Length: 499
Image 1 (spheres, helix red, strand yellow):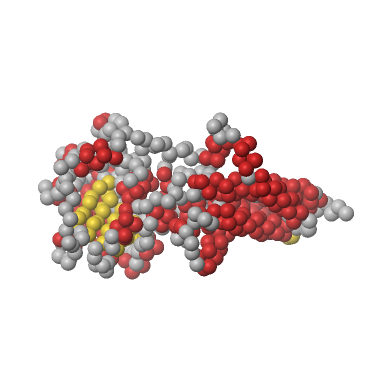
Image 2 (image 1 turned 120 degrees about the horizontal axis):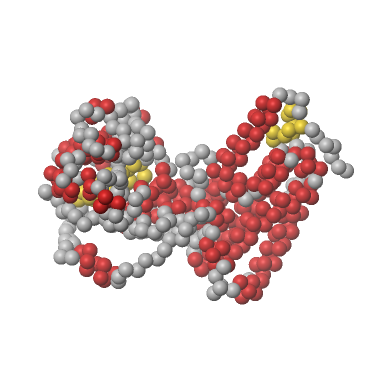
């Protein structure tokens, strides 16, 4: 019996809720099948670890629910009368979306056994490769396709498609209620599609924020990896010389000295610190402290940036993956690969490790990527003490350099030796704000960034003054670098090598 035509607006669809829950159930079954197919190469764990991977997996499935099942959202909410009167169409639209999810997972069930990771949009490029004939795969995994077809048939039978929607107002009501309906619906969908209101939309690499890196492939999903890699260009492979040649050029006459006492290592990464702004490398007057420090340090005059964006800094410095391609490694299909960063290497040598960045947690997916590649202690804005926050401490992006370096110095005192830590500063980033007390005392320069670089220099000077009498200072190697270059008035710095 056909349902009566309803001349009303639906603000919430009961069928949609049933279908959403069913979609999450399908994704959970897909996760279990993928785990069963790839269990042999995954790290073993406890029941609680697997339970957590599946539990957080439901949260990581939200973007898949929002994007892959978007046709069902549109059909049920934009056409409530037609969807109520056409249950077969409602069922078919959902099944087509579920088919895409199941198909991607089914392909990866076999392919992950070879690649040892989830695959994204690169699956499409493999299908277009003349050297990859799909016929032999279909023949070898015939049993998998039989199970796939049975699964699709079950989904079609079990998909909720009948029932009334919950209607709360009619066409006689004011138009503002129609606008309210559209706004609420759009907000709910956008929240689900983004995976909440994070700085960046939820991505497959974010799985490492919730579970250990070895369980990230389980918590994530192939559809999520597919969404995360849409529009990303492949990372190109470069081969310039052999490892032996590279070692000879880089090390030169330097020799690593073995000592009984392990040295502490502190990386100070100054936002946008370019050679252009320094006195000892380019004759400018914005970095008097670094200029004085250069006389007591080893300096690399031929220093080339591995990228021009902060997001390229972490893979470059701590994983040895320079940002010399067109794509950003953190946002690429390879971000969830098993890669060891410097922190994990130092931890294996008995070092305590930590990364400090006074910006919001989740900025540029640093926290997730660090967790994925091996870092135990990440300190972002969330960890910055509330009692230290004042109008002169916090600016657009986070904590100003001077107070943040003071905080880092205090936190370092609590670490056991030896330690390997790094801090990434913020103030010399657009909008180039510095505390009011320094506005008149620092050189303005010819570009807005110049004064903030001068402020970063003062902050470093005060940081070294604060730690020079500590017990660990004389046993510590300090490395000062920029995350990337920035803009200039000198044409040379816009050349291929200059930039």
